[in-house]
Length: 273
DNA sequence: CGACAATGAAAAA
DNA sequence: TTTTCCTTGTCGC
Image 1 (cartoon, rainbow, N blue to C red):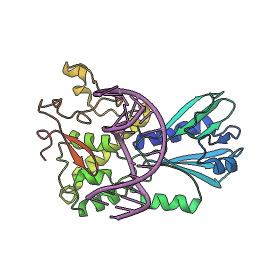
Image 2 (tube, rainbow, N blue to C red):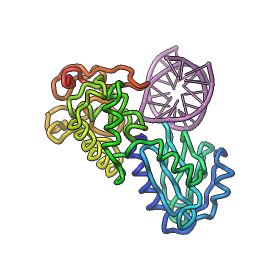
Image 3 (tube, protein in one colour):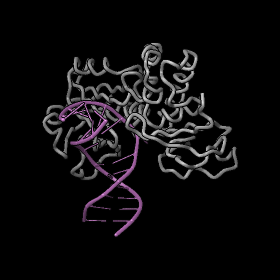
Image 4 (cartoon, helix red, strand yellow):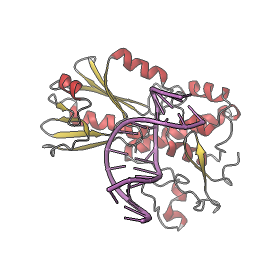
């Protein structure tokens, strides 16, 4: 379920299992990364880093000589386990194994060996990431406030803000009653400040729990006396994938539409601003 | 067993 | 704006 929180969590988990440890065996059973895997095999994993939905694994010390750039895309997945690993299936793009742990990467949109300058170029084309300490929310607002695109499209644009995906965009707009079709240039500085800081808090919690929860304590199923969620995306939400179900707050039907090539969900009654 | 959807984004047109 | 790529699970026949 790869939005930015997932990738930051993966950076932590890769580090916990493979840094400060003997160099892992690196393989690519699926084959597409085989040459690079052979090059890295036996080199220690020394750093891991996330920016938006991009994951970077640094091999070699001290400033990593090699970076593996991973992007999960829509359905890439990572699976950690205790050593010894099971025989790999033929879809495992990248496997790391040491004496205590293994990790398998399947179905990524990107898994490539890159250099430090290439890595820098990726950072340069990404907007600020609410989960990174170096993030500058003003840089994002400069783009938002100049754009005629809708706020819903801008939140999904990784050049504007990195790490927000379809769930966080729908949920943060609901939480602040903002009409997803409002043009970016009509978003006030105060509103952007609210959106940014709420995203920071929500996504930090997402990293901690490894899932997306956006429902305030007073609106949980227990607090509202309604049945718990039925959807299988993993967390408790207001509108995401709840098309035609009733809004938790006002009871009106949640709507859905295509926006920025994805399914948008919103409550037309609660999000009129 | 094929069709299809899914929290993404780049390339092609 | 449309097509393409990556994988897995589910649904319908």
